[in-house]
Image (cartoon, rainbow over all chains, first blue to last red; front, side):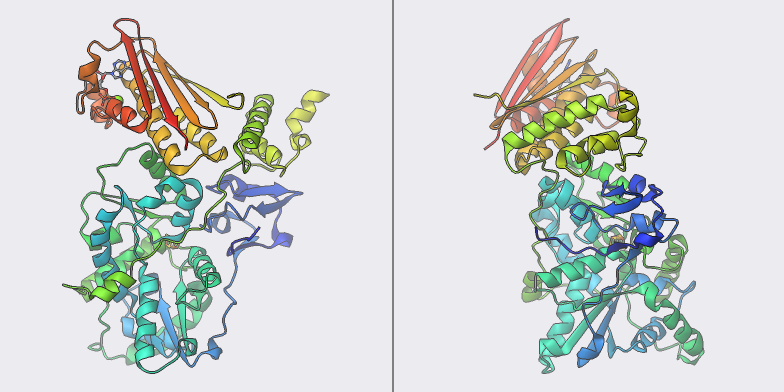
Length: 414
Length: 142
Ligand SMILES: Nc1ncnc2c1ncn2[C@@H]1O[C@H](COP(=O)(O)OP(=O)(O)O)[C@@H](O)[C@H]1O
Ligand code: SF4
Ligand SMILES: [Mg+2]
């Protein structure tokens, strides 16, 4: 089986088998086997919840080590909009970008420009998918829909994300300057593991414009040192033309705000998103125009690879909006871009929850599964290493667990 | 011929807005586990949910049975009354007698029965005033 890549890794020697991750995983992708957590990779959506809840730092974000920045002639960084919120106050974006450059980049791309383009295109594309349209931005949410709500995939708006649009524009520019694509390295500074995974996986599909990603938390201390050293030397008049609508993409609701969409639902946290998706599936929300869903609480500001408290970061965004008070306006987007910025939302035909490849075998397994469920006490004690009695029954018919792992059944036999 | 099938059964309580929707959620999960195709899942889910919520909102309680075959899904919803006086009227888009409470919770758009009909290949409704309402939906799997 071709496995897709994931960015959540388990350090076995740290794991004490405490079951916290198993209980908290919103998609039931974690089991505990022989007192160690095991992630079922075909279910994991890279939301990072296990990293968040693990008391022993056993779940960690895996670094993207597929690239070596030194191999590129020109090195361009695309910082996530969240980066600008991480320093406890309004800091002139010029100095933050200089700090990023000092990490070894030649250019730092202003992603808020790409955000504004995407807002404009999305507004037009929303009507081309069934209501309610769903934002394609958060990779963990798109993965969740693909795995557990495949029939809702057609609701996902078919537009590239600002990160991909930024990469496209950068490549376009350097091609015109006479560079080969291989000479240009485009690196995303990411707030979350979801993006590390998405970038790595699109590279496997070999059409990615982005060469890799770096966790913001990994470069934070260098950036803040640079800022502290140089902040006073900067000319206050020299200011980046960042847009505040673009910056708001960092928060839940920022996309809808930038697109002026009135009838929208903004939701964050995987469990909350699941409640909304469940309702869409039942035919509710047919009158809602747009669903803006983020895996992380607070939107990308809640990303696991950021440093500052997301709610404080939100306060800082407001400060930026006061200072910048600027939005890129695109009266007309050039036709080529309008077309090139559309996307086939990343999907990989998934086996999803299927018990077997053919109907007859699946029915047999389901009958057996239901028999097991009737045997089990239904107390979801977790001792078997599955998150619930129902999940355990499913694990047994899938061959991941054996019935004798249930201590309650064993007791009953005596 | 149809010896391979899965039968699911749910009791639906009158006025239970909180748990209402569980039948269609578990039906959806079962359909996914059986590998049924996406658009069929969507239609079954919508039809089942509307039937389920009608039992919650308009009836004294009842039950839903779903039988999944290789080539079709049969959903049967039966309640214990009060029945529907004028079925033709009830079938009209926008017609609703939902209570104030139900409306406050976002129900009562009068689209439930029409949506059930639209979602299924075969739709049957029968009702005896003072006794029961029975709905049968067949959704073909192609
Ligand atoms: N199970 C039922 N028992 C009694 N009356 C029903 C039942 N289902 C539907 N009805 C009647 O038919 C009407 C239309 O139903 P429906 O199309 O689902 O719209 P809504 O549920 O929004 O009112 C209801 O308002 C109610 O008067
Ligand atoms: S909400 Fe933002 S930070 Fe969190 S997983 Fe999605 S894209 Fe990443
Ligand atoms: Mg109804």
